[in-house]
View 1 (cartoon, rainbow, N blue to C red):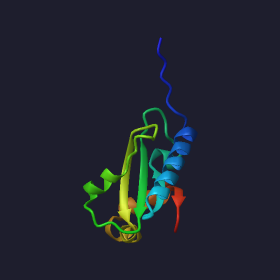
View 2 (view 1 turned 135 degrees about the vertical axis):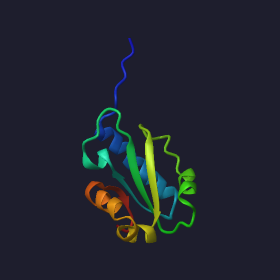
View 3 (view 1 turned 120 degrees about the vertical axis):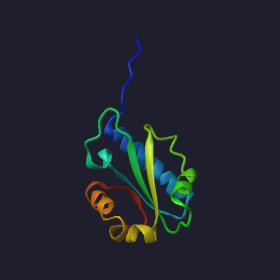
View 4 (view 1 turned 90 degrees about the vertical axis):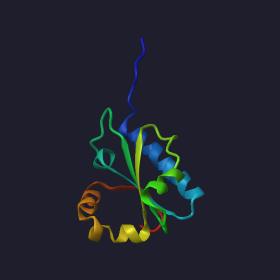
Length: 115
């Protein structure tokens, strides 16, 4: 008999912290990594994915191109990324107030250089 076990929230967040630290060491323009969604709120369960926010000092690439750079395969779950430049992050409440409100409630920083 095969038994599958979903990783604990603590294990997922620890792996996310390790991933964030490694990414920051390899990418000097990565200012911060945060977790939001169910893992940010603390109510993740079986089937939850991992939602991460990355803030870069500068990024002029289109949104769909920004994701290619980040290998999330070492993480234990399917992972969705939001990647913003510092300027976009600082002005988020002006251009996407709904998302800014959600992130204001749910976001927990895993790594921050200048937060």
